[in-house]
Image (cartoon, rainbow, N blue to C red):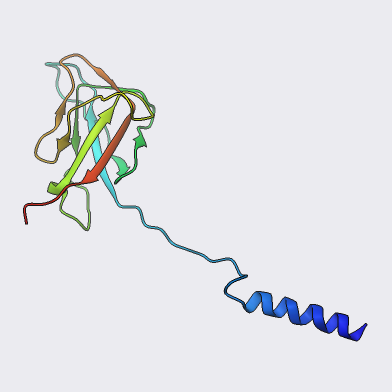
Length: 132
C-alpha cells in the first residue's frame, strides 16, 4: 500500500515538472493593417467608415458584411513595424474570398469600386516587396 501511494505521488510530481507532459503556452502575434471604406455613392461627400483591422496574409470578413462601398483605402494612421507602402490589399464580394470585388489597393492608390455602391464582404492584405 505504501509503495502504491509513493508511486502515485512520484508520477504526479514528474508529470507536473515534465515539459513534455505539461501544457505549453504560446503567444502568437498577428500583424494588422487598418482599412476604411467610403459608403457614400458617386458624387456625394465621402462617408468613410471607422478603420477596420485586417490581419496580414489572412482573409478577413468585414463587420456587418456585406457592406456597401464606393471605394476602399488603407488607413494611413495605422501604426506598424513595417512600411505601409509595402502593403497591398484586395476586396472580395463574398466572405470566402472567391469573387473579386476590387482591383488591388495600396496606401498610395485606393480602390474605386463604382460610382454607385458595390458590395464587399472580405478583404485580404499582404506585404509586397519594397523598393529597397
